Length: 344
Image (cartoon, rainbow, N blue to C red; front, side, top):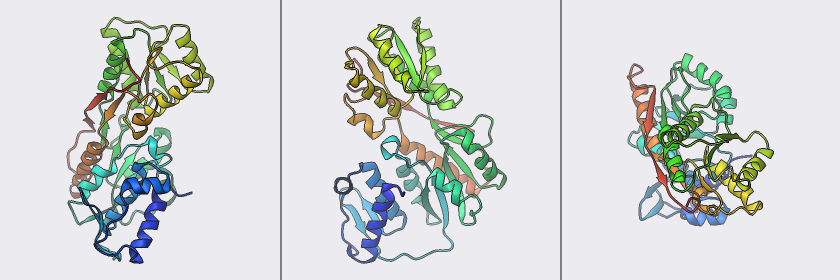
């Protein structure tokens, strides 16, 4: 089954090539498309960005998306840059593409193509002739390490997004997870003294471990001890452990690994009639679109997906031009606290 953004992209592309939308006309807005297809704005934005990559439209602030061409010409001299990211749920994913696209659009040498991790593993490892470089979101280190090793040996320039693989020779652009964990913990400790960190991923993943370390260092700095510092959501009953801990006065605040985990906890607590933030404060991480739409709206740590995409692309373009281009193994992008209704 194709991602929804792809279906919207293909439908609009067909309408442009058939001249239903002639040159100079304006396509429906992100909001109108989101309403028509019953999807998020992130999904429609991704579809319109794909059309811009095809050079069929130009996106102008205040004017919308304008059709500038109604046919596609293959340029054999233009090479692909692949953006490999999960598409399983657009509400669960940040908008790296805007920063990537803005940087690539400054050159006529490259064409951006987005593809899911699953599609990449299936179709691309042995078909890289026209690929100049790859921006790769590490979904699961254990699943991605073999394919990344193969790309490294084939000397394909690769820059990782979000998750650094320790002692692995590929640069990574990622948010400042340690500081994010500290900011999230400080936010709940203003009114609470029994926090818990809740993770859905193993602490072997560096991004989760860094957020947890930020949590621990903040507790130590403020001389706070807790009976339950960490809960791993390995099974459904672990959500019950959280609600029981709140009702037994052992937990009064939650720092979640990410917004998706936080929203799942909120939904569970609603079922248990536990009031947020009166009985428990909750902070997420990422500031995905769903964070502002949850009830109550979620206090979270904002990571600048746009800037991460931009910096990663700048590094990749330099690596393509000069394979010996010197770059740190990790580039950290600042984060900030976004205060909403889920904390006191």
